[in-house]
Image (cartoon, rainbow, N blue to C red; front, side, top):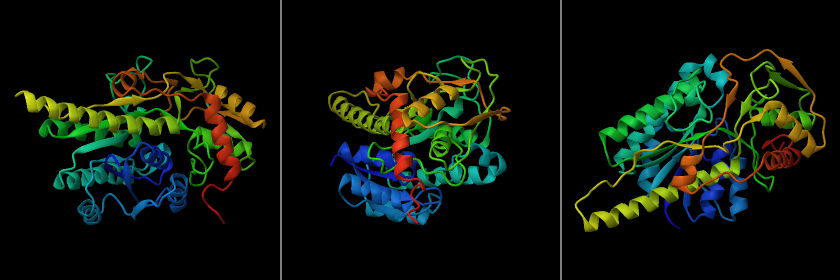
Length: 357
């Protein structure tokens, strides 16, 4: 094994897929999750897919005593931090809950990391930190602003990480700004399992296709886009998972190079500081284009209706992923058709998600 990684929120949608990718890349993992919006069954299935038990701790990132115990029991190289609440609508209704969990929780985690001198972090950020973009595609130097408390909580954490990097040059902090993760593991064993009515487009489409929901509501058909519906950069969750492995591999390689440099010169800069990186395909797909693609793959009609725009929604959002390509040697490989195919397989095999009853 290369190194041991703590994966907070590792039982969640992106976290569970990343655990598989980490194992395949030779990393040892410990999963830490409070199961508030995830399932123990996801961890069981990851263990089955990788062929060995998962070291799992049920806990909240705000529980500093438990975090200290976990750090005391393990020698971590770093942390991949997924743990956080993520529903935009809920964040508008319950902003204090989002700031408490996403911001205060991250501060607790960082404090414990500092105590145990574990200063390598890959943070699950979001393209929502870019707000309504002025220029497309969006690169990492684009202005940041937010239209909802969820996005603001991610941006606040980014500011904290920036300040931390300035205050202490030994930190390596890589926020990965995701665009729109969709899809599922090709085995059909793990996938996106939203509580109640899905907040995200793809699981809503798949639940309509399988007959669980009657029709899809499309918010707005008068945007200045190819067909009037919103355009987003959809990325397969397994490509996204590989992006986290690429970030860790890059960090390991960087630190090894710096150690070598320091041995032969007086030039000392042994950390990367704050290094934000977009993870997206670089291509925009409209809501209607995604519906059409899913209908073709599933061979199911997807009834839909147009309703008024949602407050805070923007017309178009897609990434420049050049930095990830150049720095991490990472690119998204899977197509919209792949994303739909894998989502449909997961949905058919797991009509009730991880609820086995």
